[in-house]
Length: 342
Image (cartoon, rainbow, N blue to C red):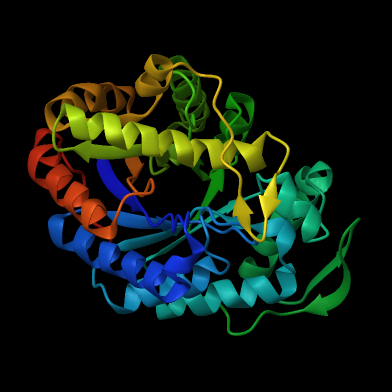
């Protein structure tokens, strides 16, 4: 099992400043490369103070420019929000500037609040995503692509420059049926149980395994990346404090994911979670190093290829860096790494 760090750009206090926010993300990327992580993942979200990266490809290029081996994954580029005729060229350019270390993670979008305000209602996101993905694949694969569909209608075009190598694509999916179907199509998979139960995670991993098995040797290269809030605490008291911060993070997340979308001047109102303190504790990985090793063994046994961890839950940058180093020193040596990025 390899380890990947989520550059989640959590922004609970907008007075902190965007310049400091992104400087923090670059500093984290440099550190995780130095201590042996395989890669970083970069989200895409707009108009809200959580997962705040309006342009993940731009940040991917910056990260690649200050690192040398780190794999850079978008997590995820929201296809319905982009015009594929423009986006395909941006992907090719980013892959060239990242020197082949880019993994293009794509998805349909998750937050109804931002999708509606961008003029792409969440109710249309599945259809828009499916058509957008088909167009993107066509534009990356061949010249003179012509399209007549529900959301796109254009005469033959060729994206320039042409890709210099096949661009790896990773699909985001949460529902087991979608995970299995996407795997059968030959895509790498990103998923997360969010703050749901371990049983939910096992269902997701099982769906990937079935899809991969159905492909036989053709699917041997496919990878499953699974993310969770994950932060190594100094001690039990520190873990309790960080768990409260994590509850606030998820209170904001679920407000725009499944809740009413209560946002004022870009700041999401943190709503209370229905989970009890113990239920929440069992559904995230915020604990001391010794407990972390024990709990992550299940993830390794399930066959997860890349574990994506998000330690940015509202504490200081110094604490985030400390958690990264503690994870590398006290947790990672207990797990066998496969290979570093190209």
